[in-house]
Image (cartoon, rainbow, N blue to C red; front, side, top):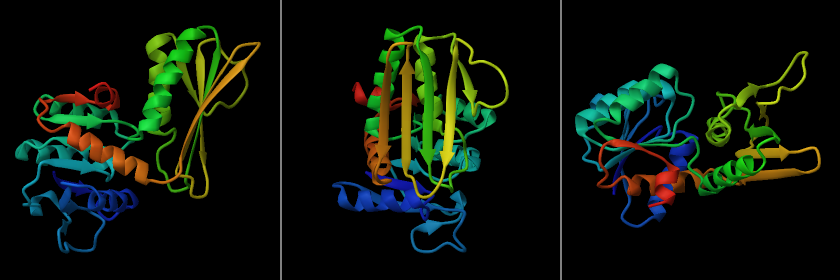
Length: 246
């Protein structure tokens, strides 16, 4: 599997390169990174400079690159693993449009553990329809978006079984908790890789479901599995659920 990696020199780019080196039949053939001073080796600054033959693109760059990335992928007819979060509504619309032409794997978190957590949270929310639910996510102090894409995906999973649910991000001010709200709280400090906890409480008991990532390698491994999953797929949107159920 030949991979073009965007965000080549970033924290996650380095993790993907390490995992790819250790994997069989997996090779990073080119990198695209706007942050490098000048093109060097297999890493270039712009998509126009990228001429490598590849099977898939893995994106760990910045959501502002979404348009350029998808223009390039469509032109090359390459599937894309989008592992960048924080897309604007306009960028999300561009992703949906591109999925009509190429396969796109989109997930807020590429950890299989998070996929398991999401499934458990959805089941518990359905089993306790009158419970109160809070989501707390913790990340390093360099993370730009809050709440995290994973926290929002957990909320969306809850909303699938409780359509009336509303998100209250960073609760503050005066007023009682409403019946249908789901509190979402973001903590930014130190070098936390990623901790997500969902608390589901009735007046008599509470369930706490929690996932903690010990290293960024877990996300790199998941992105490589997603890239392999896209091989031979038709245009469309794919996610962790599709891969787990394959």
